[in-house]
Image (cartoon, rainbow, N blue to C red; front, side):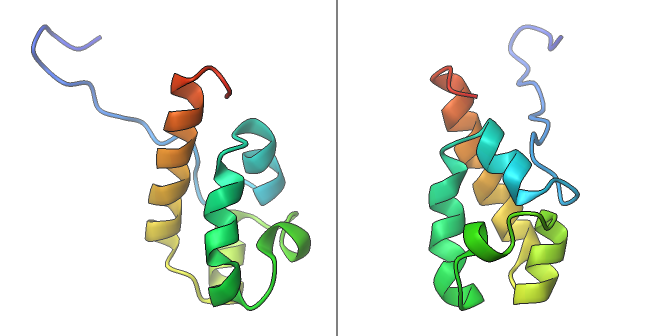
Length: 85
């Protein structure tokens, strides 16, 4: 627990070893993030990489893993704050 006036560190919910399937199942808002990366990947990530880990998909499709994880965690945080995740 953080002391009064001290912001607690945010622990990433989504990490590179998680599969796309697990992520979109747990955090529906992340689908939009994956959709934004489809053009860069050259195909639908949720169609063709659903069983890959985020790390594998980033390597296969030459995506920026750190940027992708940041966007996915931001979406997951939004989803959870509304009670969706």
